[in-house]
Picture: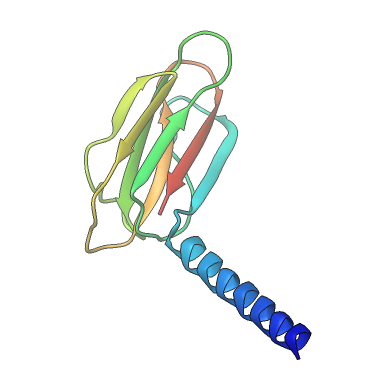
Length: 122
């Protein structure tokens, strides 16, 4: 009987740890890497999805300095949530809650075509 009780306690503990693992994973942030393609000067590249983004960044990983920008649009519109954040090589912005879903976008403003990477989090 002790062996059966021990097994039952082990099964209960495993189930509890499994449930706790699900709770922490649902509360964690979800990262969305997007673009990472060659785009022309002044062209915006978006993630094409509608989420409640709380973070967005734009980066250029090649040689030299490239002026990159990130922005959020209200989903399915061309309305910017806020003015774009821009800087050389890497920029990021954090956002509070918002009543509308948003789309994340990145761009660059330095002459030739460049590969720009976007990363957003909700």
